[in-house]
Length: 71
Length: 307
Image (cartoon, rainbow over all chains, first blue to last red; front, side, top):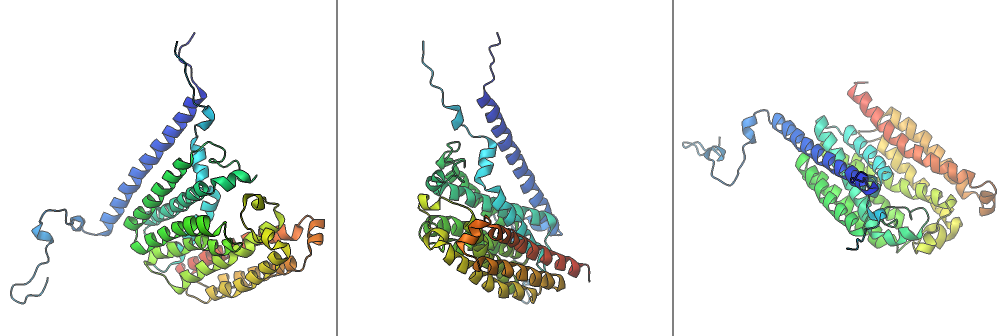
């Protein structure tokens, strides 16, 4: 006699687990896709750098020392 | 030997039960009108951003459906039409529906904000709030005019779609809102006239039960007359066009004729032919809304094609 008995409940749980797994996987694809689209829309991928908590001089607004106008 | 207590298997939900919480049929109307709002807008949206935006709107609508089922579980259990819904049937626990509803609402709103703009996300959040709190919690059990004001929740999607593309609100998006808003009462009351409901037993005030079918018939005609100028006005905005105007005129005549017939009938005559006219007008009301939005799409396509 087989000891492994498949209860109907396990089938339903498997269905749910697969559903949740699929949802999470599509969410990853979604966020990745959004990132690709948004970065490409910037034209220059270098612009994607933003303030991340540490001082990054290249992100500071540049001013012309002679005129004081921002560049 | 140890006793084993088995949890009743009926308590374990399937994936389909969770999907039923999101009211997929309501969601399809939301997706369609939001998509039209997005596509007719004068600003092009990247297809993937557009897809994510529509998905967020659909998930937001589904989440508010789950919140509505959580709040209304007591009345759903008392009515035949809704007694088999996942919560009254015992397959999904109320807490699960509440948790899913709140989480997905926040998720959809934040993702829509990140993918598009704050106005679109704000409108989505307001729609969820309006459907859940203003309609479900507050008005539904309070007044027979519940669906008039509650209809606003169903009217927001094209406005959100428009905001996704343009980042703003305009006459066009306000009129698309007004079209669905004014259409909801006659559409719903035509249904209420021929569907024998048990809203009364559940303590939900429906116009047909609080004021009777005569008053409901008057209301159907009055709201349909008020709907006409909204529909025609939309044709004279930047998103209107020859196809829309022609469609709108025809559909308005058709719907008005139906509303007039409904108004012109006594209960005896309606019962005699098993509410034939009421059923027909309900169908016409569906074509009416669908036709208007399809016509908007066709005119938008013609503009893009340079016709």
